[in-house]
Length: 174
Image (cartoon, rainbow, N blue to C red; front, side, top):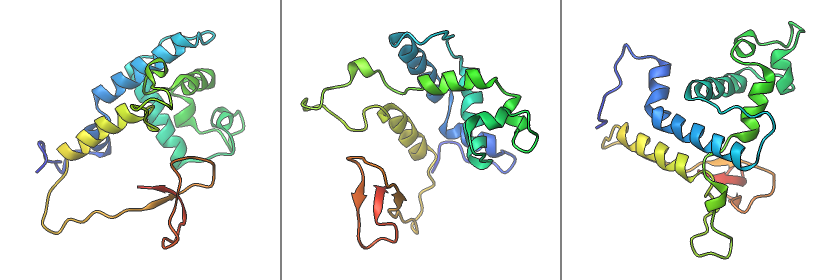
């Protein structure tokens, strides 16, 4: 059983925060600021937790309301402008955060030849935190089943798999 059951009066934001809690946002803030400092990004101002939450919210919104290019969310053309996105932060700040967004310190990344090398090194901290959140909020039952799925991907990646029996034959197995 989950530590805290999901209550009927709680909304979508409460559900989202069960998984993307303060700890996740602090990780994003710390690693993004560290990456920007290590790479001496021009005109960088440290991102705050509140700003990172807004950025992630914008990314979710952009996934739901798609326009041909990122700049069009801030367009002066009313056919493309998405006011709820444009009101959150300026396009230049959005792009700067997107440029620096990181989850793990590149300087501590093991080399390919190292026994500790992990292909998922850059996303491991987030995966670990989300897995812990998923476990803490899971509802166990006798009729529970877990299935695998294929996420379609046509690009080059050493993580890509080929499964001829699946409807989506090439991609990432989840």
